[in-house]
Amino acid sequence: MTDTVRTGMVGYSLDGSAGHLLRRAHQRHAALFLALGGPGSLTPAQFATLLTLAECGSTTQNRLGREVALDSATTKGVVQRLRDRGLVAATTDPMDRRTIVLSATEEGRALLEETRIQGMRANDALLDPLTPQEQVMFLGLLRRLTA
Image (cartoon, helix red, strand yellow):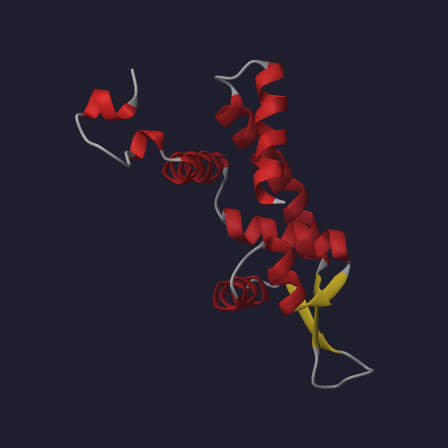
């Protein structure tokens, strides 16, 4: 039965909307991620930012935002909160003193290692209803959609 027949409405329905379903899946993952964290743990955006920064070594805030796929205002707020907690350090680029370079601190890398387990458990919980083959396919399809 099509969505149109089932709902009696012609056109768009939320239960057939990829965007709506992806948003709901994202909300579920964020809730799982936060529920698995302890006091002082990272938010999903902070985790993604710190993980990307640790993988890059050091980078500018603009590049970091692009890598994590956050807008500049959100990136600025996330980075500032990480800096306030001593998890990210900011230095001036010796080649261009106007450019600020960010890097994960030792404390940031230590918290990141703890939080990786939290992220893996949230992923496992989210994907649990799918078979292993479906999980691989689902993640592959998401990568294609976001490429």
